[in-house]
Image 1 (cartoon, chains in turn yellow, orange):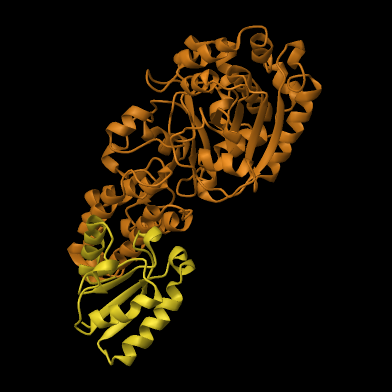
Image 2 (cartoon, rainbow over the protein chains, first blue to last red):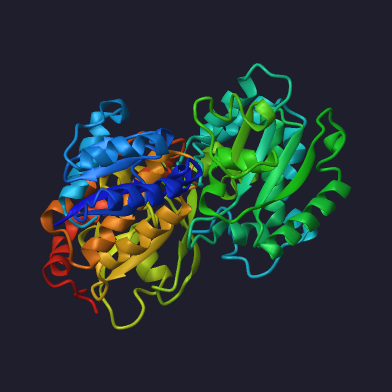
Length: 107
Length: 419
């Protein structure tokens, strides 16, 4: 299974720019030649007030309040660079809940 | 037993003012305006009247809180949003017994000290709105409401408000938002409407059926009322049966009547050549009851002890030909669509549950995905402004416990055992 970047696409995150973020992320991933990474929409992570949210799986990194300026650091992480600590602000119990769901392999 | 609301059986036509007066109509009001408002509250409290909108909260207590709130003005709201799928009781009362509802509303307003009442009625109920408007006109010309009701010092203005027909628009505080001209979004509680309600003032929001019980209680007394039903759930309740029985309709029964009686004697049993597998006593948000519990009495405590709830009495049958997974897909989709979306936790929970159950339906995820249902529900417990977030829980958790074979069939074959 390849790696995925889930970008929240619920109405709240959309109004915070998640569609543009998705398009930009796809471009940067392609530019880096990361052919094993797929960008996918996700309906809602339950952290709307912290949106837009991007979750990397199976890395299990959850980046919140992501702006276009943050995308190079996220792409860099996908290419083997460091975890972007400043965007890792989500409560650990919510993260665990969503990661367990993703672990079922069907989402 | 003669009904309290339907003394002559389910009414087939509209009862006009003269017919209503001929059977004692508005006598409760005549008696009450000569006495203190607290007398009405006392009668309703002593009778043990509980709300019929689903929660079963003691009506007398709600009125007392509203009356005691330290404010000059107060409001009374009749909640006839009736957005519960399959519920027909409020519609029947509004259409056919409008004066019973109007008298109850006036008595409630008098009891809490409200000079303005709003009748919030499902906008799709054209006939109900017309029936109520006609009844209001008749009642006003008889001085039952307006300036100086029946010559007393009590004045009351009444207005009909058409209610949007999405599910959450029937939630008490969403009702208040709509009356204030805003979107039907529930408010965070506390404060509760009894202290901070409509336009910031103390407000009692009561279901149609609840208020229809008030005039009979005031007229005939609490002891008479307590003679029907059970100690904890006095009086009767109107149940709605739909197309899954031979005789769909509304049925008024004393609290405590066995569920089986409603299904078999009133509804004529399950439709077609089928057998009952489970019953949902308060569709779509209650736990399923297995067939073994079909003799459970229809009252709040017995239903709670049996692991389910009475809600507003929409009873749904699941047959042995039905698959519980397919039922859950419909239920989970309903709540995902009807979640208003203002609370992130509710949005995530309802959408995630709907997506998960569809994965199960398609045979994906295995045991690990079944294990996630309880975790998603537990994580979101107590979150959100209204109770919608809690509603998918009982059907899903009871189904997982009672009918594991249905889930297993989907997960092992990807196909529904019922089709």
